[in-house]
Length: 283
Ligand SMILES: [Zn+2]
Ligand SMILES: [Zn+2]
Image (cartoon, rainbow, N blue to C red; front, side, top):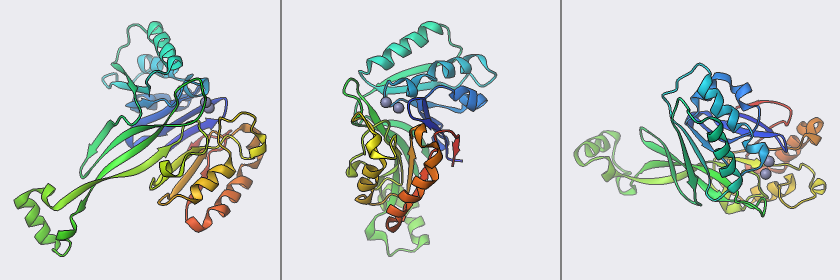
């Protein structure tokens, strides 16, 4: 399993990406649903300070302290630097839990700051925040999960596997390969429709889609399905689009809108998935 998600606009949103043991946002109810899996989380990345995205943090910090599990692992919490609401909430949590039995580290992040996640064989992954338009009163981030990969230098493309292996052994792997960075996953956080360039070449895009019907939107701070489709149509390289943060007013219409989005993006070959606001989502 890659993703476990719960997301209902206004109430609660959290996205667990299991391969990197990371969580983007911590809406309420998360500890109740994850149970002992809260011990498997290594990194938490917060997008902004609205209560539907952070209210579950206190419970999660507390559950890891008191439930049966491995307390040797450090929990790292990352958030947009200068976001006062998040800072006030973290201060409160620390005051309420003054003697935690595990290490908790807090990292304010600035735009573009790369957070190293993991090195595994031929690739390494990192998390990189980008700015989004959400609420004028606070700083809001989206996040990219980046993967650094290796590819064979073109001048060696005519060599056989055996010759390459010998060359790598003799000269080192860095001589025959170049590294490049690939956007693996893009998570919008609460935002307007993301600009095309932010989503370009990202294999999986998780985009908030509070409004399935554009006319239902009162304030200019969330995305609507039409706009997302228009943006995504102009992108290249996206394989999957997961729409989340859907308002519960559309609970009975989710499959209808999924079909429309699939039809609109059919010629791009993008798989479209919607996170139902009343259901727990796994992929
Ligand atoms: Zn929200
Ligand atoms: Zn919000």
